[in-house]
Amino acid sequence: MQPNHFHRQSGISVLLILSWLLLAVFAVIIGYLLMNPGVVTKSSETPAPAIAAPSEPQAWQPTLDNSTKTNPDTPAPIASYHDAVNRAAQSVVNIYTTQTTSAEVYSNDPVMQRFLERYYGGSPQGSSLGSGVVVSDEGYIITNAHVIELADEIVVAFNDGRKATATVVGSDTDSDLAVIKVQLDNLVPMAFRAEPIRVGDVALAIGNPFGVGQTVTQGIISATGRAGIGVSSFEDFIQTDAAINPGNSGGALVDANGALIGINTAIYSRSGGSMGIGFAIPTQIVQQVMTGLITTGKVSRGWMGIEMARTMNDPTRVEDSAVTVAHVWENSPAAAAGVQVGDVISSIDGIQIKDANALIGIVARKAPGSQLSMEVLRNQTPMTLQVVLAERPNFDELTQSQRTPANPSAPSAPSQAEQIQELMRQLQQLRQNQR
Image (cartoon, rainbow, N blue to C red):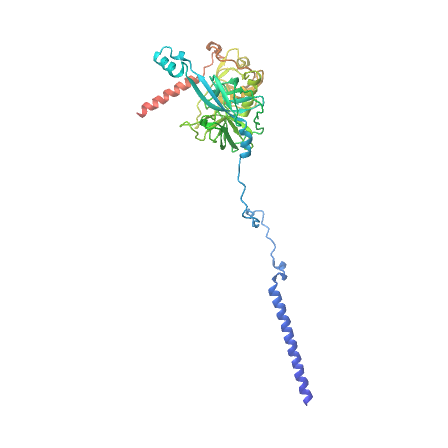
């Protein structure tokens, strides 16, 4: 009986030991899985991406950059125009002029004559200042005509400290541009921008404001094609908010690469200083004038031979009418082409004409002898006229008798002077009514 009891307990002990071993193995496996969760795959539990129906497009979500910055202490690059200014500044000059006032002006004023004799030796001298841009290594400098107007002596100061007297090569008051020349070596001409400028482009004005010395101001191109400013006969200005002040006239307006885009000419100001509205002559006009003055001493422009009725802009009108012919010069290209008073010019060579300044600019940029195709409206009837331009004459040589209507029976449109007189009369009437 003893051996049987012994075998039963041995069997139970073996089962007990096996159970503990299995439990230990299970515990080890569970612990391993808990310590290494990546071993368990979830591919079967990942839902398939939902595809939106065509009628329910998914909204766009911006992509977020969650990448870790490798060097957060590195400063961001700072925008600088140093290289552009350094290139352009060596081509910008300061211009100083002196003018001698003749004592003959006061020939009937003995008191003033004695004053001038005592303090000025009989002829007082005035002075003015401006800026200019070197455009050739031969010494040619472009500036404004009003900078060197009536000057008896012109002194040019360069960025490197050199100074030289200059002579006038030619002046074009219609564009307010002039070319002067100095006899110096190692001059650096400024490069002209080849690409068209755009509103919003960076603009840097370089000049000599108030005579303080060469100064750089920064802004943008605010607008292009500005006209009606009253500065010159042919206006197609660049407008900029780069600070332009007295003394900047004739200086450079350059882009962010230091290339010339215009010649600073005028400002709109109620105080005499910059108010963020400055005007520069674009390079396409500068190059035309500069080439003419250097090669022939004058600028040849196309001329049609008409005068236009310049109506005041009316912002309440939905559509602005085209240019109306007010007068036609006798024996002019317009008269030869059959243009009549009252004709409404809508386009030239396919370019729409919205105002008189646009027409003047197109014609002035054409060479004498060029042929224009002009669309006009006469008595509500459209027609096309071919006009061969002549060279723009000196208007001092033209008399009032030569300005005759091409069609005497047609009613004459009011001239610019008549429109201004009528406007002044209306303003005066309004002031009287307000009192």
